[in-house]
Length: 369
Figure 1 (tube, helix red, strand yellow):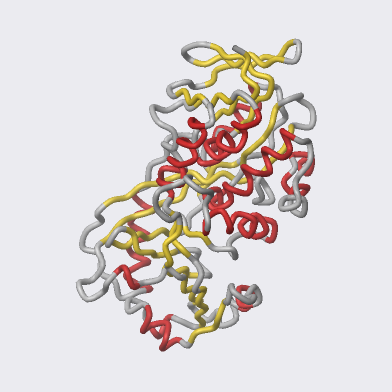
Figure 2 (spheres, helix red, strand yellow):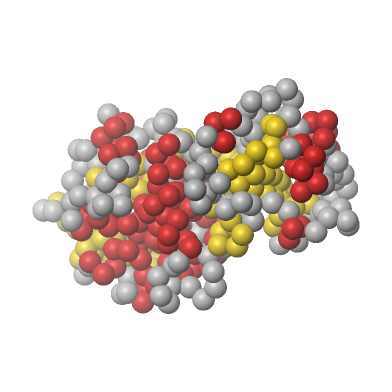
């Protein structure tokens, strides 16, 4: 069989693309692990916020908002978003660090300044003497990542897509307009290859003969700790520490914390570094009133960026019928709906639709030449 579209990578990018492309032809999704979403997607505790990332990323977030708030009929059984809110604080003398964030406020998406006293009342583990400025975003919400990913996969299969696991790609060739994609187990034929391989996307590109997009996987560490007995996690917002990049957010009755690290590394099954964990625990105890007696769980994931920290979505400039869907960084979950739609528009019609046309040129691989 010759598939119309062969997608490499079963994370959120590949799964969402499979779902959107399936009505337009025969789709095959290849995942190298035992189950899709093992790496970055399966290690994300994502928030939906329109104001995260650079200006292009924010445009894509805005384009995804309607999907998250009102998913298509039958897409999922429970809401994808749960209200959370996000409190961003500036510490250590950076009293004007949040002015740019305040400037993003608009009707229906208010971003409001909050007094130090009110911020510390909202988040009791903050130290008043360490908070210089606080800003609250009421419309930030938790994303049910597991439901989003599984619903995309389920929907793709219902639309006729085939999902194959344990199919690590080892080589690719193209002849007479058809790709032959070799895996560790067999080979497949396809007209168009979509590279949604996450941290491995540049390696897949090299197999196809494409020029590197300069993708850099970066490790991010996270830990789970118990909250104090007098704090109810369900009532807390997520807390971002603007200058350091660290954050603490409720997660299943516990607290998840990350230093916001971005350590360049090779693509691999990421694990947390003991020193990173120790430094994070020390930072938490210095900058908040939280006391860590035990780390319940720790992990690390890879967030992959190109130089401008903007996704790469579009056909390769030199290799025919090879499509990049890569470089989503730490924004991939909340950008997935809009990027999947753009991918389908570019492949099915050759041009971005009304929703995508303003940001599509900024995502093109051509910008990286």
